[in-house]
Amino acid sequence: MLLISLIAGAVGVVLGVLLSLVFRAVGRRRQVVEEDPDEGLPAGMDEVLAALPSAAIVIDMDGEVIKASTAAYALGLVDGPAFASPQLQETVARVADRRIYEDVNFVIKHDANEYSRRFLHAGVAPLGKGYVLVLCDDETEFHRVEAVRRDFVANVSHELKTPIGAISLLAEAVTDYSDDPEAVHRFGGKIQKESTRLVHLVQEIIDLSQVQDNEGLESSAVIEVSDVVEEAIDRARTNAESKNITMNVAQSPGLRVEGSFDLLAKAVRNLVDNAVNYSSADTEIGISTKRRANSVAVIVTDHGIGMSSKETDRIFERFYRVDKARSRNTGGTGLGLSIVKHIIAKHGGKIKVWSRPGEGSTFTVLLPIAHVDRTYDNEASSEVVTGG
Image 1 (cartoon, helix red, strand yellow):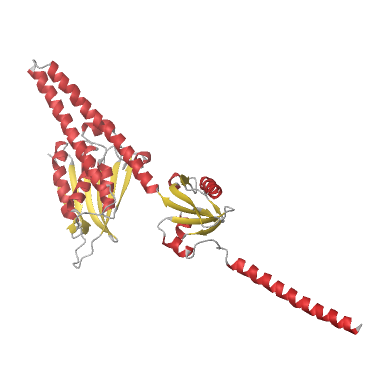
Image 2 (cartoon, one colour; image 1 turned 180 degrees about the vertical axis):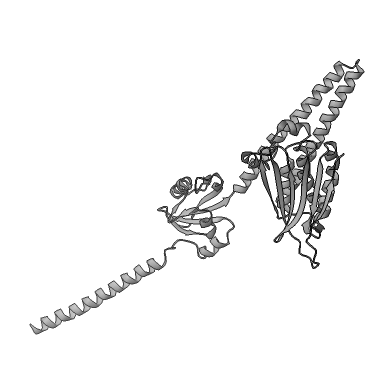
């Protein structure tokens, strides 16, 4: 009996030891599984995802996100363990099922704002055993540029039709009245006017195309703002004199900015020309410069027809005209203020407008001041330029 008890005790000890070893082995196995969720993924996957230029995501067979690069989160592609785009989720499911490569274009919109839309392109491919890899590129800028190009081409085509059509009709009229010198002279003058308008429009289109790219200035120098303003006034003088408009000029001396003299002179001249064109005869406009903190302000004021808030919101759009009839009569193309906006932006500045119907408008250009060693007297000098 004692022997049986000893044998039973020994068996119990052995079984206890064996069970203990089994439970330890199972525990170690569970620990290995928990510490290695990436089994089946190539080694160094984290480093590879971080180095990729595209946003990258790794998904398991259940459709859950296992890994995602910083760029993927920045684009809003990942929402917890799932995708923010149902279209991308469906593509991933097909690739996981069929083990084939697919491309997909989709749009992500994070709120009701139309400008929050992002146009994305993704390549989806099988990865390792039971995983799917998504590489995604943001093509929003490409879509924006393409939309701008289409819009610009459509607008240019429309604007060119008017002078070209007028020249064609006038040429036919000259042919029909070839035996009438007075009519030929009259139609010839109109052809010359439309030709001048066409040349001006083409030049404005060229100017706009040159300043609206994202590249910096080809050449830059420290320039006196007063010289820029004087150049613009000289070029606008004839137009002002034809309407007997007085140009009141008040400049603070010694203000300097860095940039292109020709481009800044063109921008200021466009503002002065607009002030003259939209003002009545025998009135006055103001051009002034002053320092504002770390900026130089160039201010052009008129007492013309003015604009509503709805019009000021659109005033810098290409081909937008407040008064189409007046703009056509003065040879305006609707591109002048758009050119101004892009020139100022190219110089790191900004432009603001205040206007009220019947009271006039004030355009304020702010440019970063060029810091120099000299100290100048900030007292403004004044000048009155009268027409006639």
